[in-house]
Amino acid sequence: MKTEIKLLDGSLSYPLEKQGYNLNKKLWTGDALINNPNVIKKIHKDYLSAGVDYISTSTYQISYKILNEMGYNLNEIKDVFKRSVYLVKQAIKETNNKREIKIVGSYGPFAASLSDGSEYSGKYNTSDNIIMNYHKENMNIIKELDIDTILYETIPCLREIEILSKLVEEYKKEVWVSFTCNKDIEFRDGSSLIKACEILSSLENVSTIGVNCFSPLLAERAIKKLKEHSNKKILIYPNSGEIYNNKDKDWYGEKYFDSSMIKKWLALSPDIIGGCCRVGFEDIKNMREEIDFLLN
Image (cartoon, rainbow, N blue to C red; front, side):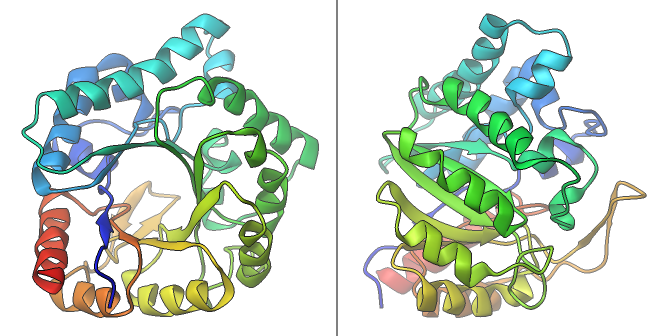
């Protein structure tokens, strides 16, 4: 049993939705970062109060590509990225934290720029060069930010991992990479998760690999697979169990996230756990309690 398991925060979209925020926009949660920054800061503070060790920036859907298409110039784009870090720092400053809080820069896959739900298919009808340039343009900005870790998350296909692997060594700080998977614990397009583990295990500054944005019912199998095929730290942060319908832009089904499930994950000794879509403050607080009970 590990003597230390760290806690990542939960969904940014879920608390925004509960407040009635319209997320059916090109920037998704990034719209709130630009137009309602105090709402974002309050969400960060609530997760800090729930007991997280890592807090993520509100930049999953923010990219050079999207903002440039919307008419932002380079300096304005850099300011948006910097604002995301500033809000996390302010939230930390304004919250009574007994833990050492680390800032994780959250950046989505190429799919995030398409806004077509391709995170759930892993199918890109474009060239490798276009995907590479998308990430390179972002990296040129991200590497200047005052963050502890960069997290590439919800990567839906091996192809994008192969492209990212050529870029991440340019980043001098710690890198985490998280995949999204199907029921067979392979990428969304069916490509090999094991191959991705092998590629990332060879990269020195990639400290952590994980799986996110998938059913919590698959979490135990995912932890076991990552442990078996990787020499990196293991991160796991599933959705609530509800299913997203891309056509209706809404969530359906049952929420499975509960204490008994969290206990089973912790028994497998992942390094970091947290929550993705539809996982909120109470869920993260519950995870904190389960971690503390196990380790104390």
